[in-house]
Every structure is written in structure tokens, then in C-alpha cells.
Length: 106
Length: 155
Image 1 (cartoon, each protein chain N blue to C red):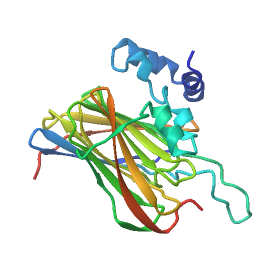
Image 2 (tube, one colour):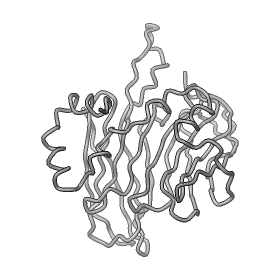
Image 3 (tube, chains in turn brown, orange):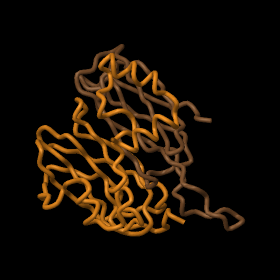
């Protein structure tokens, strides 16, 4: 099952610095297990980041993205209290959505 | 007919929710999750094919793209790469590891109001150039940086 993401959105001026950590095996389809069987591909294909419901980042990933992927981005025109939503979908159709609120810089 | 999108809808069974989201104007119909996954690009094995799939043939090298990556990556399974584009009106950023079995690692579409900055961690099979392919104002620009890999991350 999809594990929850860790998302942090901190305001720096009018730009929100968003850091996302997803928990996912990201199997490449090239690795073999202890029995010599190829471990099938299992990776996040798409990640969409929204700012108050509007898409700000639409990504397409391959299996070459590292295990437990990290994604960092900056969202312009953000204010404290704005909602940042993140949704990922993997190649098996599994998906997960999490949402956080932008916090002012401390 | 977009086959990838059909598959996606069937797999998730979320057709209703998506239809509602589309109706609400949250997600434009052409950009539903995984709908436009660049299958040709991600399955290309040569740099030239990747460039072609991105439509970036004849891209111009630009000094306004900054790749932040280690000179030497001890572990090829986790190579942090950040790309900053100072080009005006940056729309799309792609990360390509030239000598990976499948070079195209990720494409980021920032046209919706994100800044020209993304950071992610990729796997690299061996020492190679990492390319940033940036689409800005309808044109394509590239930059590259060599990353030496001590232990490959593809095995």
C-alpha cells in the first residue's frame, strides 16, 4: 500500500519552497532477486503538484528516479495558509494524494 | 484516442472522480494524471532518440541553465540533481543521464506557474554526462555536467 508522503512547504518571500519525500521502491526492472528472478518494474510515473487546486508542476518520471523519491520545487505567488497538494501515480495504477498548508518562514 | 489515458482510467477506476475534476476545470482534459506520459521518450535507449521524443532536436546550449549535481557520486543509486533555469518563460525541464540504459529520467512541466527550478534524485548506471533540456518560450535549450559514478545504481 502507498505510504503517506512527507511534504514541507515553507514561505520565503512570496515563493513557497516545497520539499516532497515519497516512499516508493522504484524498481527498474533490471534488478534480480536472490533467486535470480528479475524484479518487475514498479515506479512512479507521474507526480502532479497543485497550489490551491491549480496545477503548478506536472512531472513524468521513469524508473531512473531514485528509490524513495525526493522532489523539490518553488511555487511563485504563494501565501501562508495556501494549500499545496501532491498526487503520484505509479505504473501499477497505485496512487496517493497528500496535502499540506504553506507555513511562514520561522 | 490516447491509449495511455484509457489504461490509466481502467487501472485506477477513478473515472468518475476525474470526470468531476475535469468538469470543475481543475484538470484540463489533455493533462490528466499520466495521460501524456512520454512512452517513446522513456523507452528510448539513445540520447538522440530522447531529444527527438522531446522535440528538442537542434537545441541550443545555454549558460542560463544551472545543473547542481555532485562532481563525483559515490552511490549511483542516489544522485541528487537540481536544475535552475534562468531563461524567461521556462515551460518544461527534463533530466537526461546520457549513458543510462534508458537515458531520459524525468520531465517536469512547470508552465502552470512554478519557478524554473526542480530538484530530484536519480539513479545512474555509470559515469556520464547529465543533460538538462529546458523548453522556454517555445524553444529548447540544453546544458550538461559530467557526474562521475563510483558504484553504479542499476544492478
